[in-house]
Each structure stands twice: as C-alpha cells, then as structure tokens.
Length: 300
Image 1 (tube, rainbow, N blue to C red):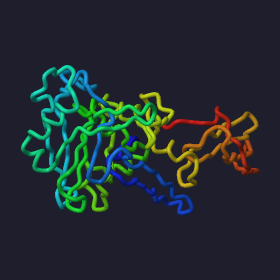
Image 2: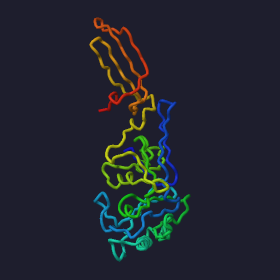
Image 3: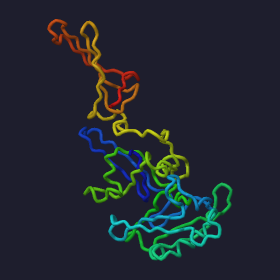
C-alpha cells in the first residue's frame, strides 16, 4: 500500500522517526494543485462520453458523482451522491451544463454547494471551453470537502491533479479511513489499493503535477515497493546480512548492508578465519565493501 493520494490543498509531510536519530526520512505527498480550499474544477472537458457505462472497476456506474464533506468537525465525513445523468438529452455524451444542472437540482447538494459551467481558456491555442466547477457555500473554516475517486469522477477529472506519493505503510495511520483509529491521525491522505482497484491504480498511473505533466514513479502497475525498499539503504537501523559463505580453509565471508541498498552502495564485509580443529576464531576482519548485484538478498 505505499501509494497515497492527497485531495487537499496542503502538502502532507510524514517524518519517519526511527531509532536511528541521525536519519529521519521525510515522505511527501504533494498538495492537490487542481483545486482551492472552497472550490474544485473538473479538468476534463465535455462532452463526457460513456457516462452511461461503468468505471474501471467494472462494478460501479459512472452516472453517480460522490462528494465527501465535513461540517465544523473535520473528521465527521458525510457522503453526498448525485445522479449527474438526470435530465441529460443524450446519456452517452453528456455536456458540462447538463452535469451542472443535475448537480444543482439535487437538494442535499444544493444545500452545501453550487455548481457552474465556467469558461476556461486553453493556454496553448487560446480556445475556450466550459468545465464543471463546484464551490462550497460555507467558508473553509467551517467546512471541507473532496470528490471521491471512481464513478463519474473518472470522466470529470476533479482529482486529475491531486497529489500522489509513495510512503511506508506506517503513514496509513494518517489516512482518512483511519481517522478514528489513532490519536495523532491527521485525516489528510487516502491510501490507494492498487492491487484490487483499477480505479485507484489509474490514479497513480495517471498522476500529474501542478503543470499537468505526468508524474513518473518508475512503476509498472504491478509490484509496489515495500517499506524496506523505501529506506533506500539510508538507515543504519535495519540491516540485511548475506552469508556467511564458508570455504574449505574455514574462512567465512559475511556481507551486511542497510535495508534498501542497491548495487554500488557501501556495505560492510566481515571475513572470519577459524581453526578447523578447535573451530575457534583465529582472525577476523571488518572492512568497507561496495555492493554487487549478486550480494543483494530479498526477505521471504
């Protein structure tokens, strides 16, 4: 689960306080650069083709837009679900104005938000187009909200520029799902299940920065990095030991290196020479060593 999504307007910074006090790695999930505290815009332009189909998970229809909001108490999230196809002339190709009309017609949505179809100018060719925008009716000091991934959001793209980052599973304690599980929970990120949800896997694969440029994680969409790999060999607290390799003359070689290190990183080689008769240590040497790919081992 090392991928997390940030749907809010401030970076999430997680400091992993390890026993090795000289190395406290920081993991950052960038802010959602595609929205404001009280306002969010759909980055995809209409018409929205396929709104009458299902999202990438294949189980949820795209006709529903889901919004989570919290009034006054930031951890008490409530759900608003709106059928954005209601009243559309052509449900297979819906316009931004039709989505706006359906949103504003919903009683619960209308009490909390107002939707508009606003003109946005393309910075490349100067052409303008209409996009769906949503603004909350109360100030950010009293209310916060975010759009739920999947369903209609998959076509509309309110979260198209939400921040995505890799962090150890430890920081799941600060996810929205665990907001009542830990006293120090920051209620700030969404833990993405890229194994069981195509929708959430696509959030990572399609992640973009504030300028709309694809974010690359060197990830093939299958195996995620484990916690120890995210350490990148920078902590002396967690060690891997390869060996000992014993030769016929009772010489044993052991390679010790910090978790997450790769070929070319610094390690420690220990050579132990034993008396073959008494099996006692005669000589022992500890020396710096540069890791080779053949030295690397993987936990079971």
